[in-house]
Length: 228
Length: 238
Image (cartoon, rainbow over all chains, first blue to last red; front, side, top):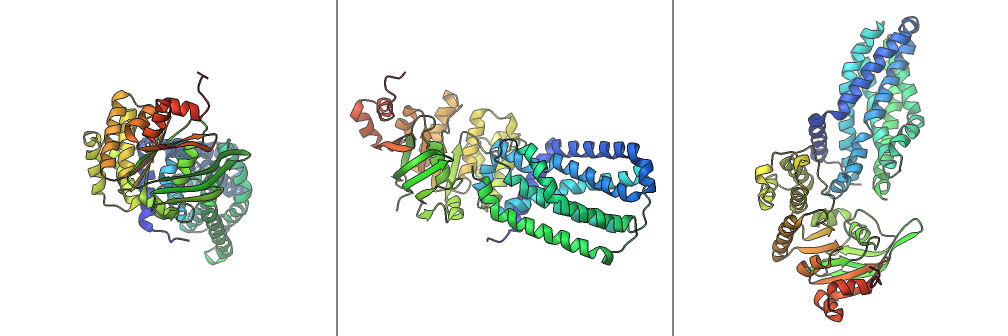
């Protein structure tokens, strides 16, 4: 397997960001959707969350999950629909570089959403924080990174399917289930129980291992997945 | 060594056999045309040579490199122009070429050179979404030539171009031929083949049904159009 050249990944990420910042289609929809979801959830279940904050952590992850499903598959689907995926494949960029570029771009999108939604969530739900906010943000970032890797990998696998945008969420949920459970558990540990880094190290290790396994599968299947 | 060489190439999509034992070769520096009706397998063949598809069996070599096993080496040496320009509409012409230049690892100044070559330097900072079809196709040629490929694959490149756009496009291809670039193109239009290509083949239902020098194909029945219709069994249908 060829090594990943950082310059090739940066080139792809820069192209993606430039195109997105010019239209702001994806980021606007993701922010609007996640903001509305937090507002609705807080209105509907705010009083319950005050009594059982672990429910709030689950709701926060649900918001990220649905927001991610809305935007993350677009990075590949758009290229497929416009035909530019062929242009990418015709360059000497390796599968790993293309996947890494797309995953980094998707992660930046999710980090942007997370940076706005996480503080909004704390304010809207009047969430009682017992642990480190920074560590909680780090746990969220790790969970989102794994989410991004899994969704990027699966997005390539469904690219040639007819109802690809409907199919992706259906196969994404079961594959993501372990990551979501572990992320919710780690986040709950930090925010609700006031646990430190060492207490949630087990969850972090499994999430990391899952990300590595999914990345490897994605790279190995990328070329075959793109064949019609 | 041939620029492009195909031996007994077979390709199926499910039960549908698209290519059936295609064997042909393209010499270096020549312009070779693949003629054939819709569904003949022309685009599939070009995509296999371009490493975008894998053949089920048979051998495909580009400048001596195996298109299946040495795809990266092939990609460094070919350029592809299809009816889809493979450009990012939200980006400007310059940004598109700079992105591809970095992806191919060639100096960024090549983007500027290519913009001049296809006479788009005055629109370099305009978004591609504002370009006409002809301008997009010229920019697509610039993209395909950024890394100075030795073989240019053209899949119905003049689809949607008006008369002026076609004329400019042909002139650009003629200049490339003078520079020694090998052209392998597909088209529905015999007049395009006559103007640009020295040799060609007619594909029908995934098989090569006629092959030879354009002049020979023409001489046998009077015109290339007639040769095409006879080879594909379509004469008298229209």
